[in-house]
Length: 364
Length: 175
Image (cartoon, rainbow over all chains, first blue to last red; front, side, top):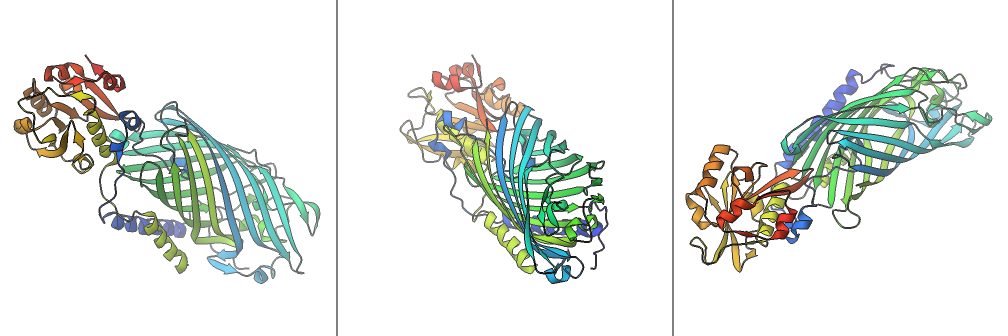
């Protein structure tokens, strides 16, 4: 099976860097041209509010699904929950789709599809206007469908908590009235997710599951990133980058590939309770270093550490509803749907078809 | 691939507003505050600069409030119709019940406020030291919300009576 020429340890190879930059520039150009069109707008009528109510109105807000843009005010707490579902169907090698039959010419087993569900819980606290601390932990439910060369189909499943993340988000620079914010993020991911998930396969009961079916990395991972946000009237524009650097090898003698994510977004607040967001997100991840001795890399591509890397660019659209006052003030709900517009995978590897997430948060 | 790019472009236009303008949300909130202040302040009766037909809110300086002020134009205030006027200097102050000072130059601001002493005009500005320079109500942003300070001494000199409830809601009061 032909392998694409993507660097094994690429943080973001040059071709993928160009593509990420290219799509970001296209999106920014479209957005700039579109925002130059002006028309009459039906404004929200703040004159109907009393002075007491006006004192409670937020000038701008953050979108729910941009978790890493959250910068809170001193002594603010936030708790939140987000459900995510990602559907992967069919294999890809490089930028080309690959049939199951083609995969089965080189492997005894081919993955057909995978569903990744995640229930993520997060907690934030701001000890000052410039520092927000955040803890996140997911509960994952994974399932993968397979077919063998003899036509036998089977499904493997794994379920449990993933890795605990603890981050700090520090505002490096802000303009008067917070017209723009430049911030840094840093933190650690703790290996609380299992790397010893097992299930029955045609090879027998209690088989070690391949890499994508494990719940954690098994290593302490360093996370560092930067954020920029710019507020303009009812608009919020932002860009972010986040790197994940694996520290050492896990107990199964391997280390997952490093990750680099770059994203940009634009949010429009239609009024004080409804906003929409468009996001462009690029992600590049490396192959696995080392190998789990319990896995046979020749049996199924998901067990091959040299077929785990790749690059993907997603477009996502979301809406958020926010409760501006009353007993439920501070609650917000959001939903976001995304599709990839570019995938280049060290394959054969399952490709992503779509993702959806639904979130709730309460700021108090 | 082409279908996904077209879908992306469609998402961009769906996520953008069908109509858009550059009215600042912050200034829409401040305009609403100015309108609400009139409910808590009494102007002297039969003042020499009182207007018979309209209640005039004048904007002096740059136009940061101008687009948002249309939201309060036409409101009924003390039995009169609220009108927005743009004045280039304080020579025109006699036409105004309220003047919003959109002036960033401190010296120019001080001179303008000095020239208004004793006149029954509510001076409103949006800088934190506005009332320290002699203004009556200063609007400012704090923790993503609009707040206001009140200089009651300046209000008393102008003959304006400010309701105690408004004084309670102020962030800071000079008295």
